[in-house]
Amino acid sequence: MLNIITMKKFFAVVFAVVLFSTAFAQARYTAIDYLKVSRPAVAMEMPFPEKTVSNAIEDKFTKMGYKAKETKGFLMFGGARIPELGTESYDVYFYVDRVSRREKGTSTVTMMLSKGYENFVSDTSDATLIGYAKQYLATTIRDAVAAYDLELQIADQEDQIKKAEKKYNNLVDDGTDLQKKKRKIEEQIVENTASQGAQKSEVDKQRQVLETLKGKRKQ
View: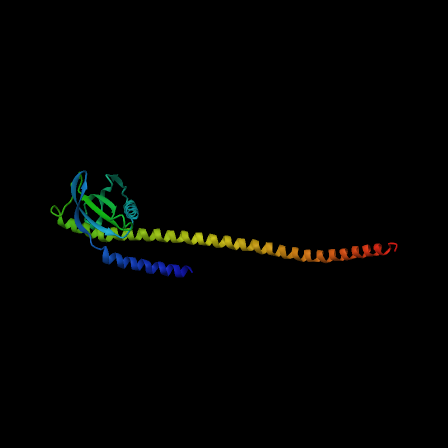
């Protein structure tokens, strides 16, 4: 049973990866408002809920040694050195938002890079870095979110198995109790049957005594 569940999970993940690669693989250059000013950024859609995406990004950067700071709805990681972006350090901002009310499982991830003091990188100030940022968002961040989501699915499936096993074990225990009760009832039935026979004999005996007494009446 567990092997079947594992195989189904494997094919579901493969399907999700293929779907993800074809429909969500492109990051684009864009702009987003931050502190009431339009800022240059890169963005892409990911087929995951916004909470999953935000938690995955925070988890990844935490493992890299950077602590998230929330600022105006953005997750900001200050002074982060990211090999995929080069040797310099950047303040990296992420904004994650649901694509629409209907598409609860799809999010838009927007990323901004700053060289410090809100000196945000644009395609005119550093087109190469923006290209790296697109690639970083579309591969490294995408893969991190997919891996995080998979771990959530695995944890959820393990929880489902635990619940199913607990229910099964409870049913086994109930069955054992019922078998004990059944044996006890069967023993009681045997005892009752024997008691019925003995009591029937006693009734017949007493009835015979009654008939004998009646026979002594004077005619």
